[in-house]
Image (tube, rainbow, N blue to C red; front, side):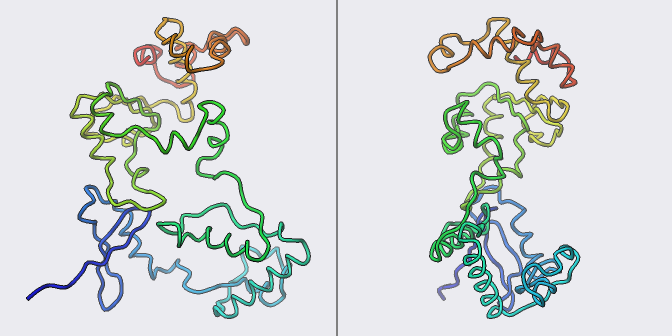
Length: 310
């Protein structure tokens, strides 16, 4: 007999999984056959589908429901919530949108920052919310994200682009074939690479790290946590004082400059303002050379370690 059963798949930010069901209810999520290193995070969804902390229906703060906007605002955070039907929810939301529009204009409606509500764009909650609010005259949105924080604003002034570097990262294949020393500020924790906002079918980070190690690439893990880089790659671990990464970078740069290890032709061709930066490293303006000794005192690692890495 021919087996016509088909596996049910679901895609999340943590990857693609095979869905197991019992009597029509999800019972487990199993790793996708084409994923060499499925994330263990995704299957945790099953435990919270009907968990005690999940909100299963629309809920409204009791005082607001009884008295309307502005009622007993001091009870926010302590007031109980009351379950309401979807019909009542739609009516309440519609009335509030209309009230705010009439009293304050559409600019008083904030459409949120951004959200990771789904894998893919059509079912992306923020996109649908903003499409809807555009239909009633618009809203106030947000600029940049809280994930990347100031980097989105600062990095373009330093490197010319922010997203450009994120979207064109060096492949693991290139690292394995051409890299000699991989210096990781904050390590390369696998948990941080297990998520992608559009979903992912195959997790390749672990395999890439191991392949690079097998190809002879040396690793340096600069992080308070040794576990931020796989034990299998035998990384040198520099457990600097937390939040002193910039001091270490400056100490490294000072060694490269003072010992004439920097690439002058590259700097001349591809950068602007190096003379100002060099002056800062040497302490021309503030009288404080950003030497390995200076950085060592801040980072709480030996100055010789900084010089050796540079």
